[in-house]
Length: 359
Image (cartoon, rainbow, N blue to C red):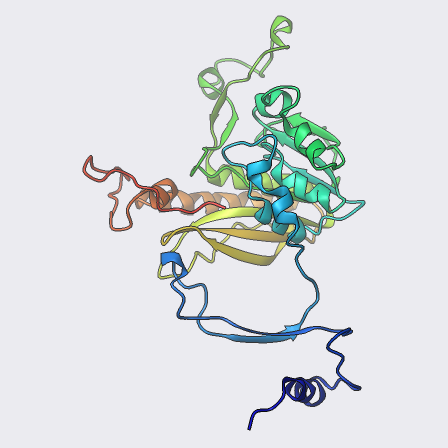
C-alpha cells in the first residue's frame, strides 16, 4: 500500500528532525529537499563526479536563474578570449562573500567579468591588469571595461590600474585594504602569464624601469614570461598583505587528473586557511579547482619568510612535475591516448586536438 507524500514528510520531520506542528506545503517556513545522484549518466564522456548518493537537507538559499540570461557573455559589450563565464563568476563572488560595503579586488581583471558579478551583489570593486590596452583603451570609448558596468547599470569600479602582479604598485606599509580578492590567474592554457621585463631587464643591463617623458602617453611596457609557481606565490603574498583579517582569497588553480581524482596538494601560506575546494572537470585529464582561502593571521616579516620557504618547496615540486613531461596545455589540446616524452613534444602525425570544455 502506497503512503501519501504528506505522511512521509510528516514522519521525517516529526521522527527525525523533531519539528512540531502541521506541515504547510503551500507556505512553508522551511523547505527540505531529497536529492539523488545518478551513477548511470554518461557525463558527456568525462569521469563521473560522484557515485550514486542520496542527500536530504534544509534549503538555506537558492540561485537566481534570471541572472544567467541577463549576464551571459554572448551579449556582453566588451569581451576578451579569457573572459570568465557569468555563472562561474557569480559562484566565485559568492565564495568571496561579496556584499554591500565590501571592497573586492581582481589583480588579473581583463575585461572585468569577475568584478561585474561582485558589483551585482553590491560590493565596491577595483581591478588591475598588466596590459594597459585592456584596462585603458578597450575597443573604443563605448566598448571597454567601464562600458560593461554601464551595460548592466552597476556602480563603476573605484579604479582600474595598469599594474603588474609581480611588481605591485602599493606604497610601503599599506596593508589590509581589501575584503576579498577574486581572480583567475593566467596558467598558460589559453593565455600565458606575463610580468614586467624584457631582454635588457632580465639580464640586468639597465637599472629601474623608466619611461621617457615624450613616450608616456602611448608607451606599452615590455613583458616576460610569468611561471605558474611564481604567479601563485605573488598572489598569496599580495593577499596576505592587502586582505583584512577574515577576508577571502578566491582563485582557480589548474591540476592534471590522475586515476579520476585531482591533485590534493594546493598552494599554502601561513596567513591563510583553506576553507573550500571545488573541482571543475574540463577534460578527462585536466581540471581546475576553485580554492577559497580565509585570512586568519596578520602579515609579518616572519610569516613572509615562512611563505617564501613554502614557495621554494612548491616551485621545486612544480619544476619536477614539468620535467616529468606534464604539460597543462598539451593535456587539454592533445588526444588522450598520446603519451608525451620528457620534452612534451608531439610528433607531426599527432596533431593537437581540442579536448577541453571551457566555461
